[in-house]
Length: 346
Ligand code: SF4
Image (tube, rainbow, N blue to C red; front, side, top):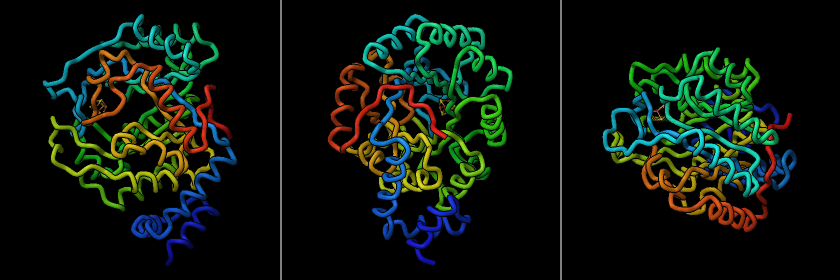
């Protein structure tokens, strides 16, 4: 078995066996550049040099869950908690709209304060005010009916990372109150309702093996999502994983390339976590096959409190500064920010 042959097989057949994925990941240094070239070329064929910015509004850092790796989990008493009002959320969107954004992402912890009625009202208000914009939600696990009501209120897309596709590994990262089976069910429910669906996972999370990553790729093959968000695990100082090593940019970018080759039309963010682990991480992610960025539109005064991991970048800049910085970064690598809805293309 040779890594180069497996890469070509992946290009042709769009998947590999678990053992083949593990081999390819083990021997990634032999084919890293070739994989990135293939991935970038596929991305260019489907989306050109466009990179789609999604304006991210992190509207609450309250969460009822206790994911062991997360800085804002319920059990962390050292967090300054905040909730944005409907008016503050709309004002963040307006700020983004004026800058040119046509795609908004509302993200928060699983915060029971925002009942389905409150969320439906917020989504419907954004939809009414910005009929030309895409609305993505990232609110965690809900039941089918609630997802449906939000979709009917005007949400287009939903992000819900599975984080790890293997039950044993999931158990090492989450308390017993959470279930991988339910999370997977949520993802299938979202697809069934009609959302453009995004999933994803951490790279280099505690106890993760290359077999785990192969399982993640196979789960993504089976789910067939429209978006995949992957980023390196970065420890947070108030978690039990505070002394664990972070994931690497090199493994994350290689996985981005494999995902692009597996499904050339994917919407694939170069995540903020990737930009945190390496100063040019987002550029590396785009050059490896990514085509989405998620700059922050949240009010600057709350940014630093939405810290899932340590040293998160871009917590001090106004939205307009992020916009200028990212435009320049993309131009330097021959790409450009495209301020459209940036829908998934079949
Ligand atoms: S990872 Fe998400 S669901 Fe888990 S504790 Fe953090 S905000 Fe809550």
